[in-house]
Each structure stands twice: as C-alpha cells, then as structure tokens.
Length: 162
Image (tube, rainbow, N blue to C red; front, side, top):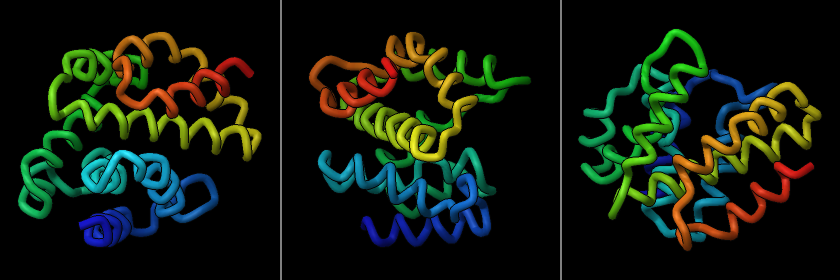
C-alpha cells in the first residue's frame, strides 16, 4: 500500500514544487520520518497534502485507501480561512481534539513539521523557519501527545531552540 500511496500522491501533485525540488522530495522526507511508525503512518505521510494542495477529495482518498487513512488525511488538511493565521488556528483546534486510532495523523503532522524545519535549515529559509518558531507553542499544544513520537518531538525541540 505504501507504493500505491506514493504513486497516487506524486501523480496527484503533478508538477508542484517544494522549493526548487519536485514535490516528491517533501513527501519522501515526511514518509521517511514516519516510516518507523508503520505502514499506515507511511501511507498517510505520502497522502498528507493531497487534499489540501490538489483537486483530490477526501472521498477519493477513502475510496482508494480506506476510512482510517481518509480520516487522518482530513485531520491533516488545513481548514479554510482568509489567511494562514486563521487557517492554522482552525486546523490546530481540530487537531487538539484528536484521540484514539486517529492520533496516527498527529505523528505524521509532527513528521511534516520536522521535515519542513530540516528543509528550512538546509536551504537557509530563515523567513519560513521564523514562522515555524513563532507557531511552535500553539503547534505543540495542539499536536503533541505524550509518548506518541517522542524522538520526532525531541528533534523538533532541538531545532526550534536554534
């Protein structure tokens, strides 16, 4: 199912870029971090932006990958809003209520943030890095769950302190 999700996501994202690289670079980075948490986490990692950034719907994700994965992708999809602050406030509020089996989505969200922060550092993207640092407290309050993926959070914390 991992290969199917990767192919589906890459096809769906088409010619989108992640900085100056193909979008697959970001998807591969997130999935590599999530891989230690199993197949479902890895599949969700490949699909985490597919509804937010393409014409793919949650219904299509559910049809291809099942309800749990679709529910998790839905959790990871930004809520509508007139600007980033409004979108993120609504999205983080949604994530703060996640529990049970859907918490696997929060592992992928942490993996996504870590991949983004690593990319900012390696590409000297200080503006984006600064934004992530500013959002750190609300992000952590909404997404962190004790003992869920401590290794990812440890690295996020280390990077955030730079």
